[in-house]
Image (tube, rainbow, N blue to C red; front, top):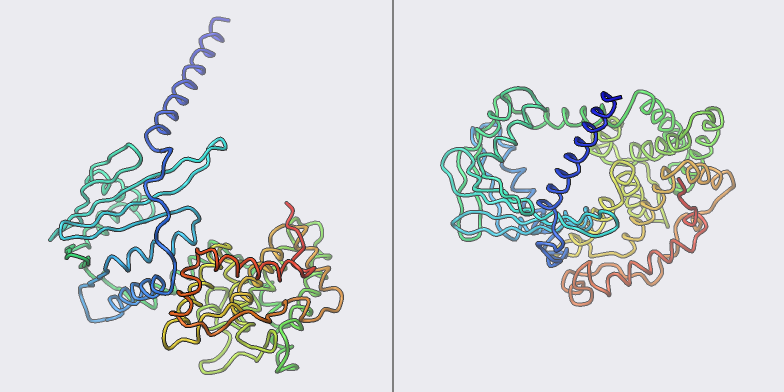
Length: 440
């Protein structure tokens, strides 16, 4: 009996220690107020700056003869990247401050605990260096970690991921970090055996290993073959004809494997990825499976509301939704339209945005839950028209220049812009297809 009491006291003491440590960690890490409030807006300039940042990175690593990589970015480009990130990760805020003394990045992420809002506030300070990376300090909530300790932890995590010594090697690649009034420039040693194309292929291979399977690939190939044959027999047709054909096949295959939970979702996902492989560009094809078209060969002409570009918006958004999540899909769609509003582009189009949102909603229903996946298959068991897939686009403005967009809508966070999104959502909600509920 004494042994039982002793064991009980030990367990109780352990639980009290754990609860106390959790309480201390919570008190140290989480704040009641955000470090940053909403301020950066995603507009055409923000997207342009983000694109420039990516172009700079791409240009730096493409030269096969350079032994050193030099990356540069200014404050606008860094903060524009934060603005895009905040659209993808709701509630996240980031801000960069650059001056000759160094770079300070501030970040805030909302967290709901026990029904109450709290914030994980963080900051990172990087100082100029002519050797290894010099992080002055990292702050998480009330906890301040010396830079050297933070780098050691980063190195340890890299060792766990890629093997002993890899963390130290990666950190040692940084040759110098220089700051001017509004710009940061980082010089990095080019890794031995570096090949950009091989890296892309390796990344795709890792992605497929993590997020696909031989069974999924077989399903995709099954639907791709049917879609490709339909394209040959119907060289100029509406997207609805493909969806009608493929989702009827998906319903039949789901019935064969009806004892497998989630089978309808698996079949629907394969349908959407097969359409991406049939109609997408080279990069999208690689992402979902493999390139099927020879270089220079155009995809079949498939339309939505009599326009091939709207079909592209629909399929690309649906695919991104399947592979990532709604916030990424919406952000990509908005960013593309904002880029189009800049001089030389086709202009911001709320019609394109309607097609983007329709693709996202369609994919959510297709794979969101077993019930919604099955109901979507039943929807296509009857003959459907394009008007049941895509609502009217009348009176939605197109071809809006950057100046006109910013005069009327300011940014994608403004009330006027949100009113247009509400109109788009109402048009989708009016169709029975998009009334299918996603129930777990």
